[in-house]
Length: 304
Image (cartoon, rainbow, N blue to C red):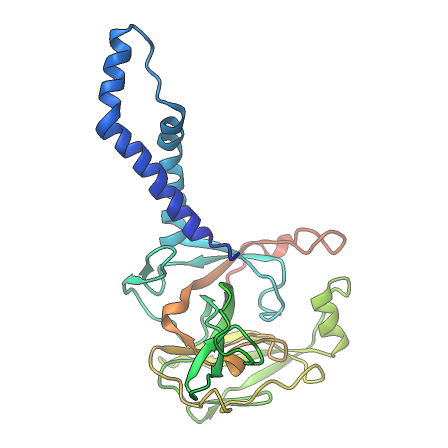
């Protein structure tokens, strides 16, 4: 069973609000009058008392998580070295418009992603061809079952291509609208061999680079990426399911750990309706027992 905390919060908010509201409208006055006439101290029934106490708390949490900021935990190494496994991040929920909780339907447009933004989104699934030749989204990596349900998961990647952009990727070479994206090598990756993800990068001889992404206004977004070609060769773009031109209402996204990220190179562009928000800060970083514990120097880091 998929766990959707937003849906649970919404359901509890509605439940507590309905219980409390209906009691105040139809039962409260009669019950209070009866107890006053009997000379008894007034108390709400336990279910009503719980609903009255919890409704504003649950409502406040729902509003904050849905429209202001929501915490997420980084579960994999696909965004290393920018984000480590065990980082806890905050996501701006109004950067790209306000959406209804649980349904994710936008009702107020406040902006669109820019090239270089780090975004959290609901994973749309792999692009597969069904029996009729139509491209559909599937949860099956090998596309043996094109109509396999797509699991409800939150992923995080960096926006590389905007709607209408022409993207070409061949190995470590990235071209946006015909212009090569440059990167400056910093040096070998330095990590903790006690942690699985970092040990993999050390064993594969990963190197760290500063990539220079140019936005539409000409400003550069300088951010870290990792390359380890000894590990795997990622898909190129264009390929049989991912065209070079980014379709309308879609974004091409990639992980900063370029050789260890399942991203748009495999499953195509990210539909706008699946966006959850823009990652902006690390508020906690947990390396694990015996591997450093809390990494205090990462707390408060702004995500670029």
